[in-house]
Image (tube, rainbow, N blue to C red; front, side):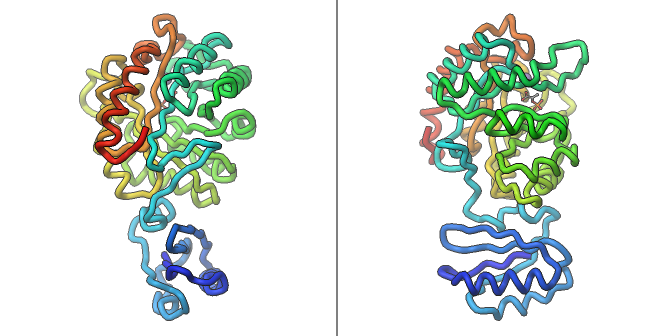
Amino acid sequence: MLVVMEEGAKEQQIQAVIDRMVALGLTVHRSTGVRHTVLGGVGPSETVDLAQFEVMPAVKECHRIASPYKLAARPFRPQGTVVKVGRVEIGGERLTLMAGPCAVESEEQIEQAAEAVARAGAVVLRGGAFKPRTSPYTFRGLGEQGLKLLRSAANRHGLVTVTEVMESAQIGLVAEYSDILQVGARNMQNYSLLRGLSEVRKPVLLKRGPSATFEELLLAAEYILTGGNYDVILCERGIRTFDTHLRYTMDISAIPVLKRLTHLPVVADPSHATGRRDMVPPMARAAVAAGADGLIIEVHCDPDRALSDGAQSLRPSEFAQLVEQLRAIAPVVGRKL
Ligand code: PEP
Ligand code: MN
């Protein structure tokens, strides 16, 4: 259930509502908006008589949330969530560009990529150190050494980092080096990983599973939110459909649908969605036009020699050209870049 407090409600009045919710056995999550404080009560709320809250001082309204996800639902934070990482904001007016290679391969490689993407306007450097690969015989990342190289390249160029954490046991290590922790598509329903991430106080980039419904995605996000980590960024990265021409099918409609269902920021990954370099710019443009809060794009300075996902990686000049196009599209949809 949700209790929306009146504008200017006093702390004491808010606390009185929290106390009553707790007394009824609910766990209370508080969202402080520009105008209203919203209190989300999770637990046995079906039998709670909402009228007892409606008559409390400074209560504006209260209602039950019909969706199975509660904290991820839009009404919990109608104004939208802005995830802040250092000077970077995800979900605000400014679009967030995340870019870099699929995997960290060497010091020189990640340094060159960091320099190139920063110059073009990216603010977040991506690069996998622990790589989930379909085949066990392919490059699976440099592990901790990769995390170190990503961190230092990002620091040299004033960038924030995002990198994947594949299992619960890696959370501490990855969180030591990276600003944002990525949950890969294959791990979207790894519930022990999600529970572990709910205890971390670092943002999580949660990728949609290739065959996950929106409800499944939002329930996965709910696992992280319910532990008190409210900084979740959703990522549409292509889903599996009947067509096999491209790597996946980029679900552009996921962007406006998710923006309606949830307050969480939504970014798009046209690289993994299409698997082809020439398809990345049109899908990136479409995602921004559809209302994405940002993009995560693979960029490699020598994609023909990349150890993973070279075919879908943009060269620095192609990325820079795309960013210029996005700068033209952004204002049309009320965004800055
Ligand atoms: C990645 O971003 O490196 C990745 C492996 O993506 P996904 O989990 O979406 O396949
Ligand atoms: Mn990749």
